[in-house]
Amino acid sequence: MNRDKLVFLDTETTGLGADGRLCQVAYKFLGVEKEALFKPPVPIEIEAMSVTHITNKMVADKEPFIDSKMFNELEKIFAAGNILVAHNADFDAGILKKEGLQAEKIIDTHKIAHYLDVDGEILRHSLQYLRYYFDLEVEDAYAHDALGDVRVLEKLFDHFFEKMIIEEKTEEKVIEKMIKISKLPILIKKFNFGKYSGERVSDVAKKDSGYLTWLFNQKVMDRENGINNDENWIFTLDKYLNQDRLF
Picture 1 (cartoon, rainbow, N blue to C red):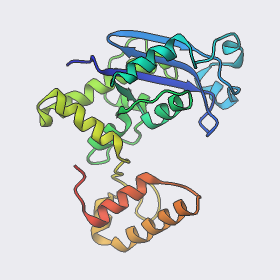
Picture 2 (cartoon, one colour):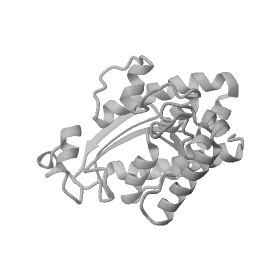
Picture 3 (cartoon, rainbow, N blue to C red):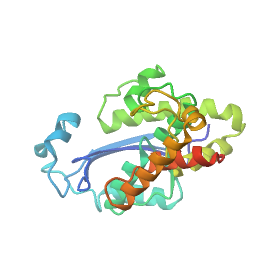
Picture 4 (cartoon, rainbow, N blue to C red):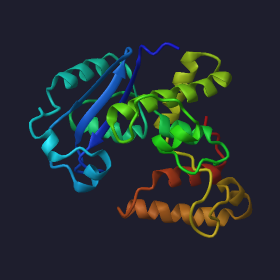
């Protein structure tokens, strides 16, 4: 397939909270891999260090990401309308946005994984779990290293692309469908809590729509009260209650 518009990218950050900033970026574009560490404007949290093994000492003498060579390269790449491909892309796109970079077109392999998991059989949809679930062959790819994750990401994208082209027929339609899916919240297939834990949401909708209505109202109330914006469950419950077609 033609990859000329695809930017496979991953970031490692100082933490997962609202104050998190990037400290490592890796991407692959036009067949060329690039990776670098950067000095973030906030300290790297211990929890993040325990996962990525990137320490404050390692980035102390690095340049900030903003106005770096990589920043300027990515700014031009995204300005030209190229497509950001990432796993849990909302997170990576949000981190880039904090640095002043905006990707207008996005493909999120995390959301594609949920979309293609029609029966809700996959227990987890993290990048590394899917790597081994689909038995992807990836060389020199270490978990929680940005460049290693980019290599897994590209293989996962290829796996999903081959599945989707059977129905969509052309590369252009697959990419369009992936972008469309990536703009929507996740449609959850099974409950993982409560009295219907392990059951399909579609089955519960048929036998106890009242429970779905109650849960939907609770989720909306929580969002309005600023407790938790669980957009995936709100989206899912609304769809099953109204039986709308997604695509």
